[in-house]
Length: 194
Image 1 (cartoon, helix red, strand yellow):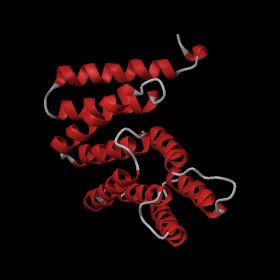
Image 2 (cartoon, helix red, strand yellow; image 1 turned 60 degrees about the horizontal axis):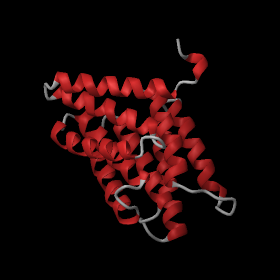
Image 3 (cartoon, helix red, strand yellow; image 1 turned 120 degrees about the horizontal axis):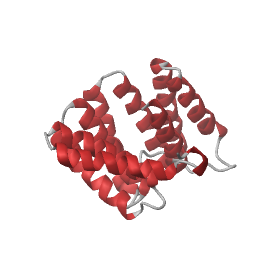
């Protein structure tokens, strides 16, 4: 799970935040430093970095409807989630989702990733009805773009499978978890396959 979380951080960095050579280097460096702190389980330090990134982004763009701000807002929410502060994390993730909705189309990978993250938070905090709705929608959109977003599709299947299991839908949960497994098998390089 930690490996996938790190993978999501890296992908979100590239997806939410299209850094260019002309961007202030603070964002790239803050992003890297945040990920290092998360990897080392230094949650308080990671949280401070996320807040600094949000502040710098607001200073630069003057608005919250900005991909860099949304990325660091996600990072901040992730620190709350990892601290088991689900109520505050839910507030932050929902803000992230609303801001994403304003600047991305509903099929844009950045928006769908935000929707998936909120759904995952709901699943982990026990709100299975909300989780099911968001994760089902995210899975359906990722399925349309399965060739370019294979890892996200697999993760959406896995999280939706766990959600269905929570509802007692073991047969559907098993189908989804097998789909996640089969999809991940496609990602392995040939020399890792048996």
